[in-house]
Length: 148
Image (cartoon, rainbow, N blue to C red; front, side, top):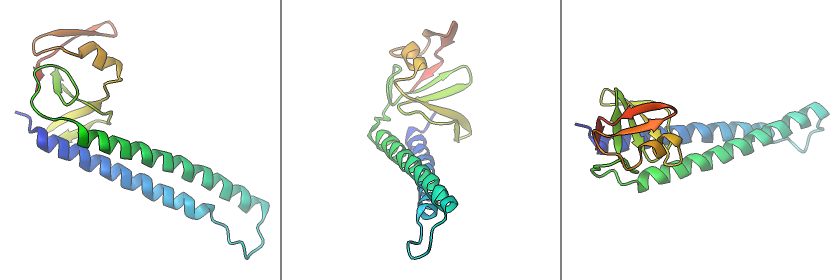
C-alpha cells in the first residue's frame, strides 16, 4: 500500500530543497553582478558582471518555476483514485508515476517514483484508465497494474 500523504510530503521536501538550491545560485550570481561603483571598473569586470546578472535573472526565473511547482503539489488532491487523473499514483510494470507535476525520479518508501504533468504525452495515453486497462504510448502498450 502506498502512503500518499508521505509521498506528498516527500515531493514537497524535495521541491523545497530544489527551491533553496536555486535561490542560493541566484544570490551567488547576484553578488557577482554587483560592482563597487567607488572603484574604477575595467571592461572585463563589466562584462563578467553583466553575465552574472543574466545568470541571476535565469535563476530568478527558475525560482518562480519551482515556487509554482510547490503550489501545484500543495493544491493537488492526493486522495484515493480509481482512474488515472491528477493526484493519482499509477503503476505499470515496476514503474510508479505520480500525476500532477513533473519531477525527476525520486525514492519514497523503497519505491522509485517520477512526477508527470497532465500536459505530458504519457498522461494523455493513460488519462481515465483504470486498473487492468491498457494505454498506447509511442507504439507500446502500457498495462495499468494499479491506480491509487
